[in-house]
Image 1 (tube, helix red, strand yellow):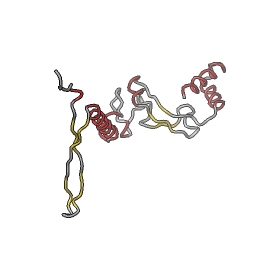
Image 2 (spheres, helix red, strand yellow):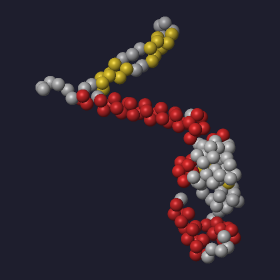
Image 3 (cartoon, one colour):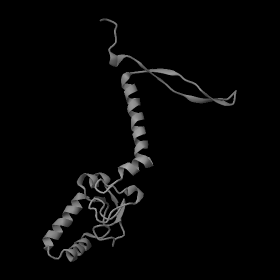
Length: 161
């Protein structure tokens, strides 16, 4: 049919504007309309949705719900954890460096998604000790491993970071 527009080609309207009426010295709402394409409307809608999702993720209510152990229901966001739960890993949202048991002073942060997904504690951070110090410490803890096993494990850790 000649002259008809496809739904995706039809113009959309967006209205916005807030201002102050200086003569009356009061706040008023003034609206205007602007013709925009469907693609522009969808872009505006996506931007708005992303902004609202960002606000949701940053809200305290969401953090309380999301930062929770799925195995024992302790709320990591509130500082709760279980010493016996492998998903909690004996800490809430932060722990001293698990590589050197805190000797380097680094603090690791919980990876909530990985902890929940694999039902074991997962932490993000970097040990402040050198690779040689880490290897020596690892050997003292696990003296039944060969030096090559330790060097291979350290190399794997280095590649992962």
